[in-house]
Length: 488
Ligand code: URP
Ligand code: ZN
Ligand code: ZN
Image (cartoon, rainbow, N blue to C red):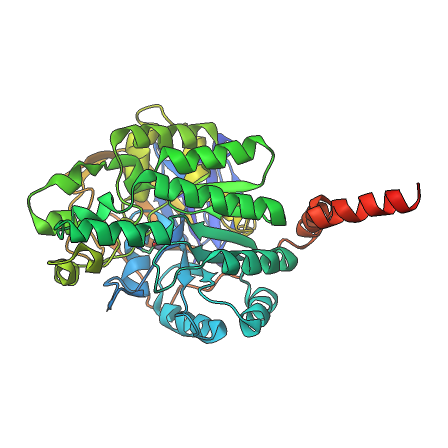
């Protein structure tokens, strides 16, 4: 079945222009004025609307087993909720338990994801190290289309990667042409602060943000960046929530280092006042790491996006309902960390970004879709409106308004961190793999229709980086000096 999107304004990361878009066989077949509809084509009237690449959420955790429970949103409901908000692809995370074979874990996540209704891919977390992990990283890159490895610098005693793991994994990733990503919080500091705060008698959820102040994040971001600098590997810092980590990224970028930064819609729009609510359920619903920050950090994060020092927006969609959060009623350290947002990311960023003049429409496309596609090497197949690209498209009505609520959202969670927020500008239609999967407020999705997306390694560019890093290493400098002395 083909779909003709007629009379809209195409908005990409580079330009905006009036054109019809014809989709067939899952791909964009033609872009131009006055395109004829093939026989039997479905036609979308997009006049007064924008036609943009579907959103890519590069950071989600569907049905994640975590902190003694499993995230309530699975790959079916989560990708469907994404489509209802114009997000047509996710990059989720395989997170092996320490000592678990990482290929086995990868296969397990692939199986879980088979029910997805939209396309998906996986970052793979390195949570421990030995020769088999090193070998399996190679297999993942060469045979399974994985080009990014994640490292949790927090969650001590569980999935935390210490410096030794970072050094080993970062070196291997460079050799393989893969990018490294980190959750930047100093896990040892968090552990110590959690204990001290709990021992002081602060056992409620307000203890969570107290145990994870901004310097804890800034230190870890800076450390990961400097390790990546010495080894010469490009690095991507997930969910930057504060000035300190943004400063570390900005500094390194100004020095020419290949560093990328992600920010969550939640961290841009919600401040730490949520932790002062007297209701346990409300505070626990906002327990995520890093936590929501004071307003000055939000202002800095918007500037980070505007300046290009932060390139992507995500949600870290990781849903736990009130009964799951209740596990930490008497001890904040046991509240499963995570909040939702995949359905609302595009609309809250449009409303607070484009409608306020903070972002142009083209910048909006860049930070919600195109930049993620480029950084994770799936552009222009994803993140673009171009002939031959996947027909993953959102038709955007800039005049439509909506008030966000857990009562009406499609996400499988009983709370919405954007509850009561009225936004202007929403998806009127979402097209995934060339099919209309969301229209007139209704989903029409097929279980299992989502495809796994291979992400190739960045081979030749990384070879150059590896050579450059080798030349700069202290060992190389000493070798050169010795050589000079010998031949003097
Ligand atoms: O609190 C969060 N962010 N939960 C999901 C796991 C992670 O750290 O990304
Ligand atoms: Zn994280
Ligand atoms: Zn996460």
